Image (cartoon, rainbow over all chains, first blue to last red; front, top):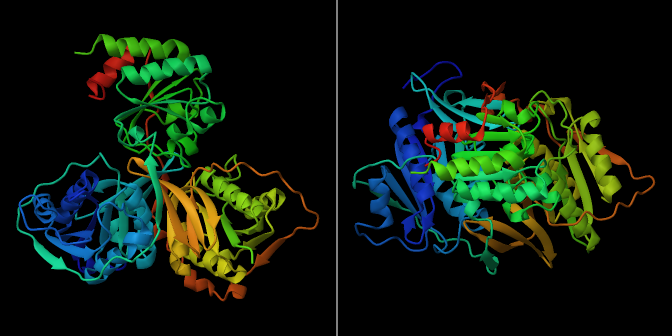
Length: 340
Length: 238
């Protein structure tokens, strides 16, 4: 590891990488294990020690399937157990912020990684602010030569990329990783456990109610088909059928919702829902920053639009010029026909 | 005493060089303003703050005043250009403190940079709790009640005030515009906030350079059959 290169010095803190683990019942959540997996690759690349931080009401019992063993098998070198609310309380800053802050005081880290879940998105920027660090939500991670790690994120609706070389940052970097995009890593059962005392802050009456989210299927969908401003009411039914034929979920843009298509719970947008599918089919959408800023950068975009000059054709992987009303049924038929 | 609500706003950009977007506000900032206006309709006092040069931010502040905000405050100093989210948050927090607040509202993220860091950083500077991605906000005595999507559910959460809430899509109706004679945009300098310009330090290295995305335009295909075949080749479809 380079010791001094003017401003580009890799600080000694880089020795520690910290991953915040969310629990799903007694088990680390899938999204957290994926984040741990990528953090494992970064730790091995930089020669750093990987800490997994778990906030829980009571320390897990020691058994082969407990959270500690699971984290060890998925790549953690050390585990920090700190007090927290019970597992039925999803993380937000108010209930989980102080235990994470306590862990960071005990383990100063150069890189803090969380899954880009609703909880991670709430905690991560606050942690970055507290540490005076850089905050890079949902980047693409590039491994260069000479231990160069670059975090790159799409901005201005995919029209620009903002690239941050970890070597250039003198402060800690906090990053969130898109769920569903990173494979978990493998490790051994050998882990050190650090027990931090302290309980969770009591926030009486914090959660008033909880109801089912009718659009939740979009959060984990591998295929999303979206109707934009250029889709008519009649065409919308065909777009829905296309979504079904592709095994995906139907979504709508802000303009489409305004015109009464679909439900607001299924709106994809910077001010609405964010999606991270493998395949994203945009029907009759121009490709505004408001819309595409909410589609994770890894998604392969297919654009269908009758206007050959629509900006979305500069941002998509594949394009078809024509009427959605004609193309959607043809696509649905082709998808159903060739399925093996 | 009525609840003091402060909404933090910013002019939306179309490019990193500050080219203006067609729309004045990003959808989250627009939602934050609408929530602020609806709370004002319920008896709260509403102030809006923007940090930036008058030629950029006064349009936003004027819009908020025209829509019914009680006060609009601009903070600007040339040294603010190019500072990272810590510097912006520091200035917004100082101005918010100077005005006095019970609830701070901000857009959850911008449609341009989309970082979503300023809100939590303002909360950190003010030492108050924050909640991100709120679908709506209501006041209830000394608390704000917000709904938030979380892992298959929508949770209704009660935050003790003072607090900062970052708003996404708003269910609030746009209240009717009450144009008022003589409402002026107030301005504050960094001096008046007790901030020395060098404290904000230009820290672009902490942000990373923005470069035009190096992406080939879409491969244009002749028909639906060819497209489905390509997607199968790419293993995106079974």
